Image: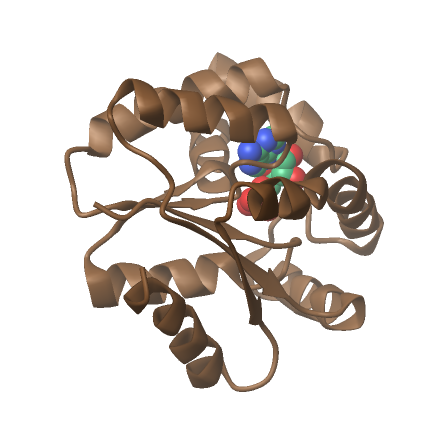
Amino acid sequence: MKNLVIFGAPGSGKGTQSDLLVAKYGFRHISTGDVLRAEIKQGTELGRTAQQFIDKGQLIPDELMIEILASVYDSLCPCEGVIFDGFPRTIPQAEALKKMLAERGHSVAAMIELYAPEDILMARLLNRGKEQGRSDDNEETINKRLAVYHTQTAPLIDWYKAEGLHHYVKSYGVLEEIFADVCKVIDSL
Ligand code: AMP
C-alpha cells in the first residue's frame, strides 16, 4: 500500500496530477477541498462552517480537518493506496496524519512537492476561476491563500525532509513531462 501526500501551493497542479495517478495506479484520492465543497453544496453544518473560512482564504481549524480526514480515510480503505491532496496543510495536521496512519499500521510512503512560480500559480487560478466558477479563485482571495500557503503550509517541506519523505517535482511546462516525473518518484518507492 502506497500512501502519498501530493503537496504544493494553490494552483500547483495537485488535483490534475492526482486524477492522472488515480487513472494509472488505481489509488484512491482524498481532496480535502473537494470534501468541504461537497459539504457546502449539501448545505450541512460542516459546510456552513467551512464556507466562512474558504471565502476568506483561511484554513479550516486543524481539529475539524483531522476528524474529517480520518473518517474519509476509513471509508476508502483497505485499498492500493491513498493520495492525500490538500492535506496536511499545517504541521499539526502532518503530525495527526502520521499518528492516524500508524494507529492503522500504515504510513506515508512519499511527499511529492509540486513547485511552480507565483506568476504561473496566479494565472492558473484566475483561469480556473473563469472556467469552474470557484468562489475562492478571485485575485483577492488567491493572494490571501498564497500568503497562508507561505506562512502555514510551506514549513511542511522541511518537516517532510526531516522525515526522509520529501521529493521535489518541477510542476510547470509540459503536463506529460510533469506527470512522468511524478511517476518516477512513485515507481522508485
Ligand atoms: P483546495 O481545494 O485544496 O485549494 O482547498 C480550498 C480551501 O478549503 C482552502 O483554501 C481552505 O480554506 C480549505 N481547506 C482544504 N483543505 C484544508 C486543510 N487540510 N486544512 C484546512 N483548510 C483546508
